[in-house]
Length: 354
Image 1 (cartoon, one colour):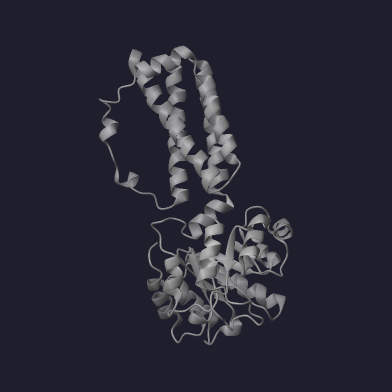
Image 2 (cartoon, rainbow, N blue to C red; image 1 turned 90 degrees about the vertical axis):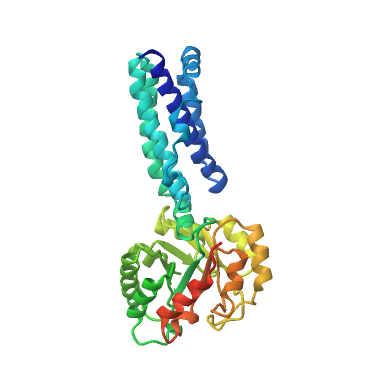
């Protein structure tokens, strides 16, 4: 046994610390999440479990030149689909390494290390659930915040602008055609109708694994178990809405200027709607168009996911996509199309890979 057990310990201690560092930097630099401090403390805890002799024995047993793992590279290691996949892979790596360390420590009768790493392993299980359930992780996934992913087509369904004859059938068709996110917005009508339609559209979104957004109404968003709540400028403050929907549901805010966008970030929005990019009849009292220049300026100041909206269709959506905004919202372009599914496919084809 001798030197070999220290070699196994050395490899897995490195693997554990490296995996934790990736997750720590994600929490700190991507999400601005204070869980980074918790992970940093875990790395320090690992160091405290290693006495000088154990550290020296592990270092002496290291064999980088002859390690066959140095030349091993699997297909799944070549890329990660998105941030959640990257974070989960590194948490799993850390958990597995912790188990190996825990067991090997028993071979050298190092009970302090074995007990300490066991406690850390269970902390990692809890961390995995906590981090991967975070709003920021889900928002990054839903908005495709990854250089390899195409921009999302975000459809706002508002019956005031729908020219078809069977809304739910067309919703199903556009979801099948590739709408990336779908918002239910209804400015008139009864609460019961809003609720019933929200339930029906939510069921369709679940069928196609598409995030479902409820506009304006935190109560209905909670009741139908929406994925996201979206609030306008005149709706409830985010802090008040969050008291209704709880800490897990992401909340977006519509903004129409850089000042409003910065205010929404400070308020705690998880993503922003920004526009109108161009003049649009989809609002009763439309705000002035911000144009492509306004969108570009805002993107330099805000790190949250942004949905560009307002007057967008197949004639101008590519220019908006070229700026690099993660999602582009349309209303009339699809709802008033002769074939909403075909128009969805056309718009998606214009959203170039980032």
